[in-house]
Image (cartoon, rainbow, N blue to C red; front, side):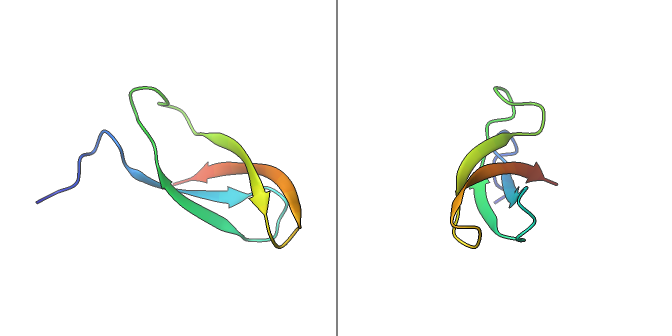
Length: 54
């Protein structure tokens, strides 16, 4: 059975250039555009912006 396409799995890649990623789900109805979240990057050892990658 297929997953619900209203909440697709997305990858969040660090904008610090470290290559670190988070994997999460998002609601397409609430966030139709690319999501940017501020999260902790353990490679950079600080909080940075993580941008959605398709």
